[in-house]
Amino acid sequence: MLNIGFTFAQISNIENDKQEFFVENDDNIKSLTDAGVSVKELLAMEPSQQKLFIENSYKVKSLSKARLTTKELFNVITCQQESGNTNEND
Picture (cartoon, rainbow, N blue to C red):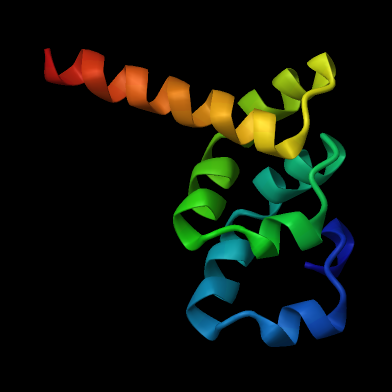
């Protein structure tokens, strides 16, 4: 996790079960940090937001080229997710 921008202090403050999730998704998190999402921003998100961002990291990375803020990126990803869920239920 250190290779993707986490500090020792940040790692030690993450709950054990969440640490495993972060380790399993380190490539996705690296993609997010490459896209400009800071580790601090990621850790400040609600767990559901973190999961959504991490699972959609490659979309976030491609959208970041449009120079959207992290909040704007989250709104786009959330809207896409809701649209996908709506279509699945039709």
